[in-house]
Length: 159
Image 1 (cartoon, rainbow, N blue to C red):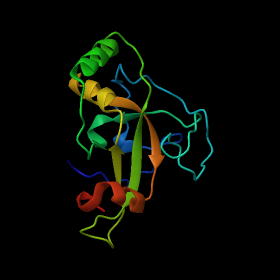
Image 2 (cartoon, rainbow, N blue to C red):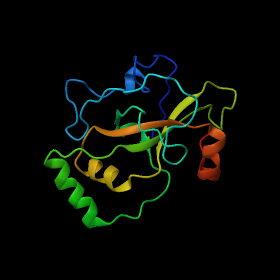
Image 3 (cartoon, helix red, strand yellow):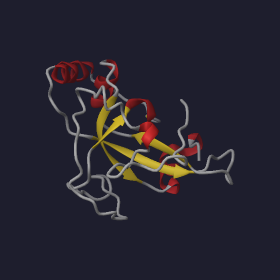
């Protein structure tokens, strides 16, 4: 999977995603309706149910192509197929949580930081979205230091 850097273009106002990673606005994903941020604060605390629940954190339409799933999923096939049918019918799902890490690569520790997006949960929603070929998935983005992600990724960590 390719790595995406975000040094060139700053994120658009109200988005954690750089411009080149924004979904094509002329062809939005049916499973990822446009959302607006209800909170504009730049709070340094994590905003995930894993870390600290914050119902006010914004929901983004994250391109599937930038998301890494480093841990294998154990899928319930019936659940995935059910989610696919519900998505086709236009149902909106709870956003998945994406972990955003900005860090130089392990092979070039003095190089510029690169941005990584990891999905650790939401495997059935992710798989249904992927199988339907949808461009984006609704997600809350949680910024986490690389040192914390290394604990979960172990030797497979790119940073």
